[in-house]
Length: 168
Image 1 (spheres, one colour):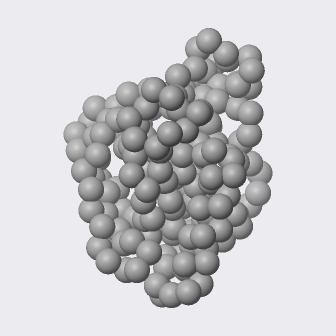
Image 2 (cartoon, one colour; image 1 turned 90 degrees about the horizontal axis):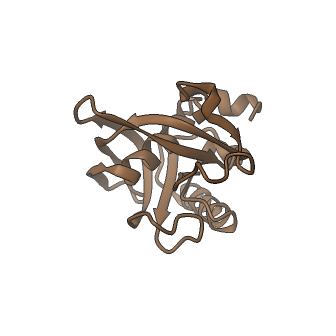
């Protein structure tokens, strides 16, 4: 948090090539090493519109439905309705902190996979939360900017007992 790159709008990917594959491999290694549910290219110093996310058996999220491994390039999100819900979020770029963030409950996302094939899904719940959190990184937004009431933002240790599953 504070790095100027994390405050910028990332550039669209123009080429689906070996450089993109290497970037995705770096994102994957970083996400797994930190037990995250997702990560965006700007978080590792690359200003491109690429995110990955997945949730299978993760000790940080024991009660959350699985989210399939996804490489999402040049994503576009479309909320399906106005319904939102608050959920606790954290971030690999804001370590040790959590905040209660409102997000759309249902949405459709589209973009491309690692090889440039079109990808489109309609999702809800935690899956929808994760993709919104990660795509925010591509638009220069960190989750604390979305917190409605800063009394619901603090160090994870201090919030123990109030937290439920959260994307990183």
